[in-house]
Length: 158
Length: 158
DNA sequence: ATACGTGCAAATTGTTTGCATCTAT
DNA sequence: ATAGATGCAAACAATTTGCACGTAT
Image (tube, rainbow over all chains, first blue to last red; front, side, top):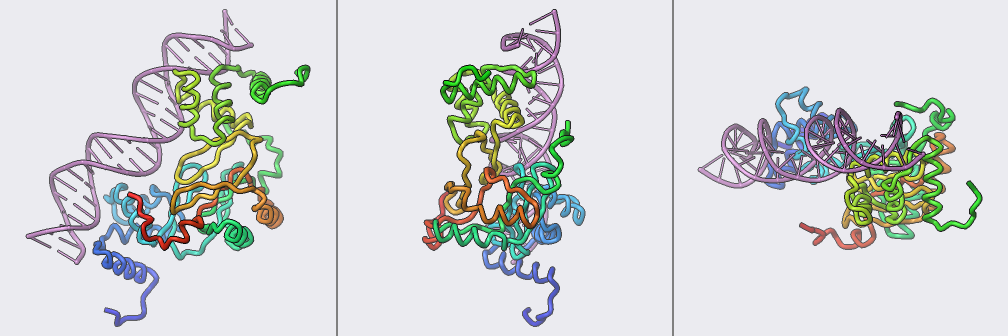
């Protein structure tokens, strides 16, 4: 079955998923493929958003299964999650391009920048404290340029 | 209102709280004083922990009130909150010494370091993107030295 | 006196668990 | 066939809301 070295990205996903599951004595199911594909397709997503996406492809998949599957996939090292703003965890595929989130407390917008902005910090913390920053998990809160410019005048919303 | 320059820290808290509330036409209540004092005393605390602390001083204060009061105090600029690990918001007083949290995903421990480690990053993001990082809100996830050292062998804890 | 604040209970939202059934292997 | 996976409902936890009563001003 290793006779066809030409696989699409998704086929590779599914193939490695199958392998990884098999290596653990776990089963490959449609739901697990769908959840993994959804995470890849969405880039970022909360469990709820993943559920929506999956449901569009195959109605009837329970959100409970999405939770269980995300946990499993994370355990398998295929996805991770970050905590943006409030308590909403957002999942993304491991191996995706890493990025740092800039969350504006003014407008609520989320921007992304290259993790390279953290290089100095990462080296610093590692040297001084032996702490390895997980660059894929960083979310920085603050005020974006736009919100900083307008003098917080009509920023009142209800 | 600047007639008595000699006040204890707590008296100052209460005094300014009263002033700030009055300026908005809001009322000074025992609950509001207690919640603010609890946040100062605890340093960091989840709404639940604040509630516990308040309840020790005055049983019967409802957690609903704690939520509403924390929101109010944040609105007044007296406290802020950060999101550590999962979804637990932790509140702390504004003006308290700022610090960056290092959260270890291995052992779950939370360490604190001076915000000065972010100086370079902050300047960078401000220059390149106009984004003002809220230094008091930063939590960095990763692996601490101890967990990094032991080869993830017996790191299993139930 | 009067509007603001609180307590209590119920409603929400997000996530987890128990269990009978189903299915990949 | 058989252990693992899923769906459904109920259990949970955290937070919010509606409303009548209480109280700071």
